[in-house]
Length: 143
Image (cartoon, rainbow, N blue to C red):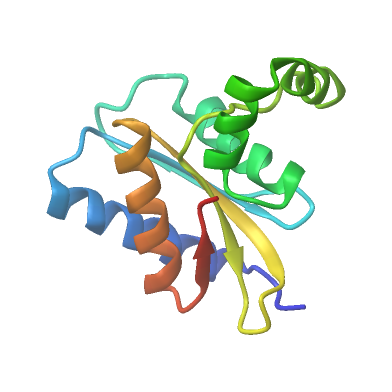
């Protein structure tokens, strides 16, 4: 399994911020978690609101919790709210079930971590996450 280093996490964040600038997105907060759900790096752009660390990490944590991008969690929340209530309970409320949490996959398709972004629309957050992951040489799974 490929290790997710601080340098790699920072490259992902840099790529996500670059995509955000290209798209003219609102200020973003980006969390990069390793495969165990531990924070490797977080950065918040100037002007991003104060809950961006928790919201972005919650999107990434949610993706890791089910092994798919948080877009799938969002669908679960709509289709099976009882499932999401249980998942939220066992996670201690750490999961944010909306798009913007994207799995980081190595060359072998193994999950090495996840990126969560919060700050713009969920679709735009996801697009920036995918761009950051791919800029760092990994594959992305948004769900």
